[in-house]
Length: 424
Image (tube, rainbow, N blue to C red):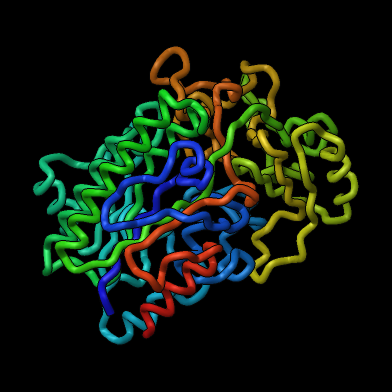
């Protein structure tokens, strides 16, 4: 098997190709439209790719999950064991093949030969120690020495997030490809910065998006050259398309107004009391999973959302194989997205609302991409968010130097083709 470099570009949708034209990334890669999974979010897309199975089978129904026993939400958990099912590379590794994952979510403990993932240490009295988890254990230190600097997590998420994160990952990927002693047969890497620009500015802001796309092109050309030199084919794919965000819906406010979402008053602030809440909405861009303490209240909870502007669909899913779905699943209307706040008065907001805190909030918070006041606080104003994703009705895209991987019409088909290639 010819070796393969897989490059996932966050937010690389077909709408960008239609508006800005084909990207010139070398090695004759033509990007073509490809239907994403649903929900069209990072962790779900990566789980579909890694297992060649839909979310109902791999149990990743979003970037977060809700533990019904402990009544806790859990966003961006990095454990690979959350992803159920055999990996597309399982047979390849059983035959002695080598696999690496760079900056993919839920990669800690994965059955691969090489892993690199952000893993900061949160200090007891606040602040953090920046670090990355690596396997082999010396991998991150080795790359830091080669590149002359460590990876800066503040460029990976938060108000300072931007193209410097992708540049470091590109350099690290090229360094691994050039090192025959470390380079695996299958290497999967990730470029994040386009996603930040699109969420901040929307896909139609040419002054912001054009430089971000040029940065993607530059990174992909470097990766293509390094891959070709090392004897690798290249697969580039986008996980979802980001569309314009013009409206925001607050499901937990709607639940609280009907006494279906409980809070604790701590001083002037309120914190969610999920143990006493009949319902909660775990929001994730354009999808919200609503979990009920008592399924008999489904009709009452559903009534909270019926006829609400910005909600396109209220689904009561058939229980999945691993029952990770909410009891109700809300899908936003085009141009809308779901925000997690349950309060109307900012003085009620919990202390973590104005900080980058991806683990405490009961939903994904794109406001963390903007500065608030005073710095280093982040914004509490959701109307600043100009781009969103999660719906599956807008194509992503993919392209490859390998004929057997080119032209897949769905993400599931693309993953199946990679699996077949590895097993051939």
